[in-house]
Length: 581
Image (cartoon, rainbow, N blue to C red; front, side, top):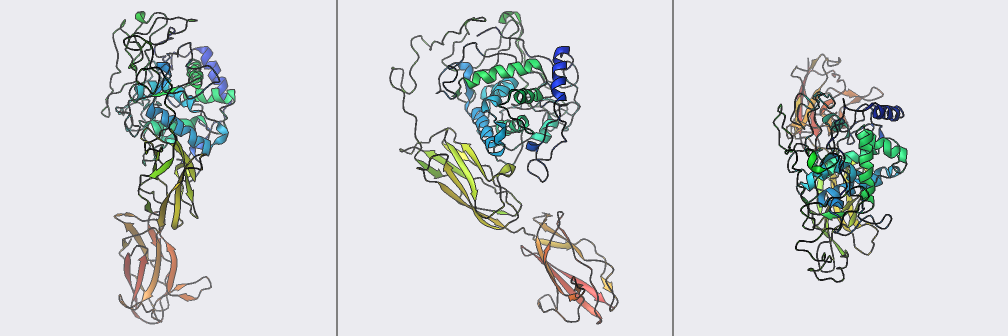
């Protein structure tokens, strides 16, 4: 490998005047945008807004300045997805790689004009966290321990006071960059995403963080195939010319070829300074020690002159060869010497095993699911791709599509998306959010661009919003003189399982008794649009707080006690007494 440039650059006070001038010029070319609404809610989405040039994603936290080898893992233009062999530095942990590719596919569907390549996310992930510390993530993509940058207290870095009450970074005084893509909490609050469909937005989850980074990079009308837009997007992540150059170097390296390695076996940055590795202190990885709110964990360090040993695959030499600019890195020698075995055999040279071909999609989730209008289905559609022998096939793009007369949508408001199968052959779609339209629709899973494989259908049903309890919001007596109007209006609150029940359909009608639904002719009444008496109201709906306020009520000419019954979808009933005296 060539000599590595710098350990971890310190931003803020140490930014050079030249870099500051360059960033100022680029920032001036961006139109400052208002903070966008959460992508899952009404209003403009984060994906459609332009990030403010004043705050970088990472808060200009430190990053890894180690560069890739001078030799690329493949000849330019020949491949972008190599088999699981090649230079160790080109290996990306399986779950981390899947997260980058899923984010690219989501953006291809939602913002095709951005032209986001997953290799750009990989380059940023490498520079920010060493690909989640070499793929130290669980099966759902969450880091096995928090990845935290240094305290942003203005000492060598930016000065950012706490914005999340320590929720993400465990620090209630200052912010810290969090997770594999190193979001500061204030930026995550705006751009955070649910990339794995578990109903949470977690900066420590690589699927969530990669998708958030993708939307940030694609903000506004950026086209990342245009060099100026690409540079502006990267600088928006960390406002540093050195950062831009480092990310672009890894971006080009990954575009020339990558391969998948098992989680936890990615190569970690060594981070030695200019010149010989033995003359500089290795750069620390971001802190990965769980924190208690209000405390500041110390970053991991090692003694000068003793570089950190990266976690390398078995075909990587225990000591990297010494190389310099213009010198190609020698090929790694397998343990015990000899020739590297051909993939697919046990060390005997021969023809590699053929790529497995998917023949069948098998349902792995519940065939029928139900959700209340406006709610989220508890389970996403799930399938497994298998070959002719029934073995799982990885890296198969599966298209999930919502079919039918429905306003239900996947996260980010899409009706279709693509998910790549994992090592177990499974592809799981994010949970669908139900709309207001009730009824049944289908979630269909098919192999993308392969009509020979039969699709799998899931049946999803949206039911009306429900309430299981009703109560008046006030306890004042409702009285009026004959022929007058009641001074107080009837207002009731609807709840479902103890929580407010918004959007629930309701009916209000005057009845003879609790058991007799006959409408008495001399009872109080509402008025229709023409001022005529109306004693039954339908198509009522509780508001966003689960409250239903009825129109004004007028007393008839007959004195007495009368009953008004309010009922809702779900069976909740309330009987209210009105007295005419």
